[in-house]
Image 1: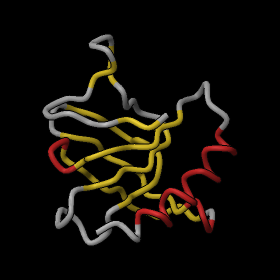
Image 2 (image 1 turned 135 degrees about the horizontal axis):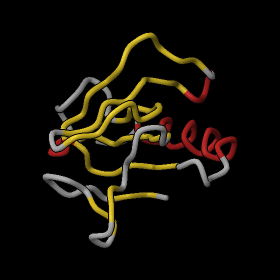
Image 3 (image 1 turned 30 degrees about the vertical axis):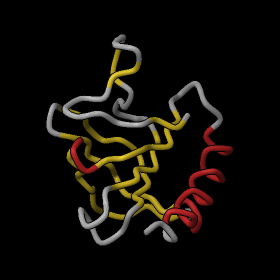
Length: 105
């Protein structure tokens, strides 16, 4: 699922949160909000300020020993997989997604 985020809190059809702890994500950030435009990993926490992600680089199957926080105002889009989704397929899609985001202006 690709989600366009709105500030202050993204919602899906007003029914519930789009991002939940445990989801896997590839977040696309606004230009200048971080050194990299795309951050991938597992959602560790979500609140009214933004989302904390345990960083994972899917292309090399590597998890980092730190988390990345992105405020809602910095997120422009997200590739999202929940427990109901095929996580192996998401890993492949996220690796491609992350590579393509490197070419964004």
